[in-house]
Image (cartoon, rainbow, N blue to C red; front, side, top):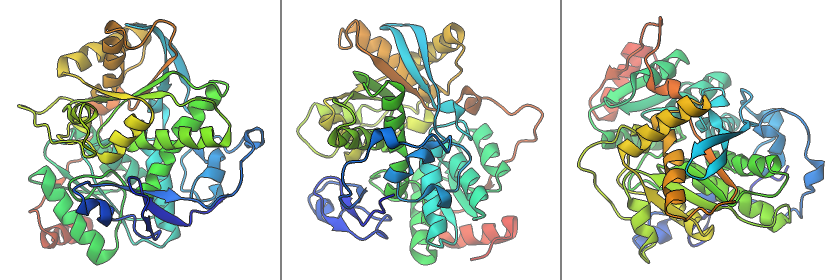
Length: 414
């Protein structure tokens, strides 16, 4: 494998050391743009795709293009998810990349396996994440696999089933009054104690840990390989902060530069707020804040501002963003379940609602090859049958309160 030698700004390519995963690009911030960093690898020549190993049967078979070797991976067998043909949406036949088959039933496992493996390799004392759902569950599972403590800061709007899932892996889950409180507390803990953050933890959000985002490149690798190295015309996925969107773009871009594939799929961000939609219609680098009158039922993608990394992936792929209402998501979710036998988290249904809308508007043409990413299982939205729900302890939004609760409730001391 080729070990990364640095991080660099996605926007201006300013180099940063490998331990700078906990910050944004200072140069771009001075320009009013919050830009995430991305791993940079030394030039190691063009890899031979015919030499890809057949094992392990996980995303770590692509270890040559990831920041760690498979032998150092904290893995639960994530990746290598199936591609399933379904009918009944506006385009007719589409292919579904079913990420609900991952160990914690969501695509977040791709980020978590790489991020937690890296944290283990550098001796991080704990994993920390700010999450209302899938990201927290994935971080908790892989932290358990690595034998590392995991602290999840959430808020009262988090789905009860997913909080129980986090707790079942041994995560120390704490509830703060408001979403922004999570970031303030987590920022202090990362700075003071060296906890390894896997999620956004300051605002404006720039995206998740850039080391973990490398795991999402494997979505692109798998889609290309499952398509006999002839990528689809469109790849459509629900988008919050655009981690998977950017990771997929990076994976496809790498394969184009290696000569493995000949084209970049047009990426589509199915969103709730309309921030990326507005950015694509403007000449501004930074997506604007677009407030909603009420919260969406798709809590995991309900943010008011997109990220530069998501915007960049859309522009560089010739893609687009599409804004959806809750009713669109419910219709698509129900149609997918009853018509295709696939039960998806409501946020995940955004990809399928986008297919309907883009096909109806003749943006997606008849005969186009379309792949929609099913990001998480519908079980994430349901209650837990015959298992006692595990809640989270309320804390004040300050580090002292968090530390006291961790000690008293979880017997964890820093």
